[in-house]
Image 1: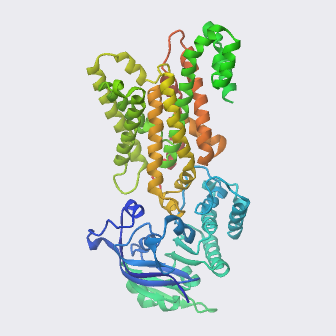
Image 2 (image 1 turned 90 degrees about the vertical axis):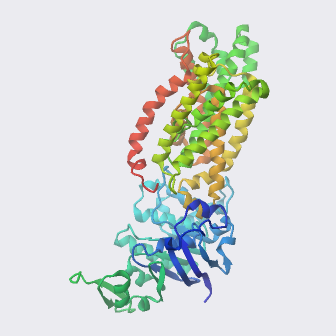
Length: 279
Length: 333
């Protein structure tokens, strides 16, 4: 198995976005280490797997994702993508390799779903010419995510699940090898939740895309992720397969919630059932 | 479209003198045809061309500049209410010009003085607005508007201060501040046109990046946009445009608000099309507003800024009301 992303001794904190984007040097070195959100993380993500980052509120999931996408720069430590330091990629090169699906996408102007998906071609295409090949890539991306029929709809009028799929289509148009998603199912109902995860699974299998996502939904994480990473107050609690990570004891220590764990019959996937009586 | 609209506007019952102007004014939207027209029609038209042509061209330039600046600011700030006048950038430019006049620099720098000082003033005001609004890591829409109000107030106060101790040309400056189009010479126009052409090209070049920026800065970054560079460049471009507009026509408010909205309704939100459309529409609106300013109470004139403010004020309220749910609830900002 090839390691797509390697993280070594990573320390990170909240930061001004500006300082992170303009140059390679972090202006945060002087920051008090108690502000650190991410502490001494080491892990690696393998090529073509769905890697779930889980943990309670405030454990640093989103910060970790922002470090991985270089919106934030680490205080120290290193993130390597395909063996190369993340900071040494150009912005454009990074955009061709890695796509990010934010928790929510809002657009203030009335772009159509097609316009939004087409923006995924920005790292490749010229500024004005949209050739037949470009259009084909956009159409393919939208068909893969089952959003082609929405192409003429105004993005703002789409439902949460539709919008999320259009943004994933944009990521596909980027021809990314790595897809980062922040709480992809946070605002979605049951149908769209499984729809999105089913889509991610397809992307992994058919396109070989490496997927890193954060989620609060432990059951979905257990069901769909190949490996999980449990964050606890910015530190690594445990990393491994869902069965290794999700145990009664860990959930109790990390989340402070008592629960029972069942195992699904087919594959033995853990299912978490909160113990309401004891709370 | 430009020509037809200006004919239409003239068809509104004008005074006897203005009626004679029909040909040159129609034609003056395009200099080439204007030259032909002046040869074939009344000889008085030649004189009128020399007076009216700069004026109509100024209107075209001011309208185009303000509209493009408005479109740029709206995209950059992801706020449909952003506009040079509301942000205080116009006031900054006016302050720059007044300061230039105060120092009596026109002698030293000639024709370049006014545009230069206006652009510097505009850039300064933009920087101040941006800094004020940037308190906290994220740029808040609400802060931005408030900052605009503050910059407007301070700039106006400083202008009034300088005007009051200058004494001479008091009336001229005040009238110019209200927005008027009849004081520009062909020489200044030439300089401004070149400046605007350069800025327009740059704006068009970065229009695609601005599209991406409307998704939010982080998303734009993930799509390969060098966010800080594009933002700086476009803010600067918007400032120069505002500076040019103010240099040519004083403070004309709300054009940069109305026009991009109209253009967006016509060509959609893609800035690659929105920019040229805004410029065209802005020119049309400004020429029309100028005709109204000249004819409404002729033979005396209303400053054209009065017309646009009367149009724009209510428009602002409508947009504010319609977008208030989106803008003021502070989602994502």
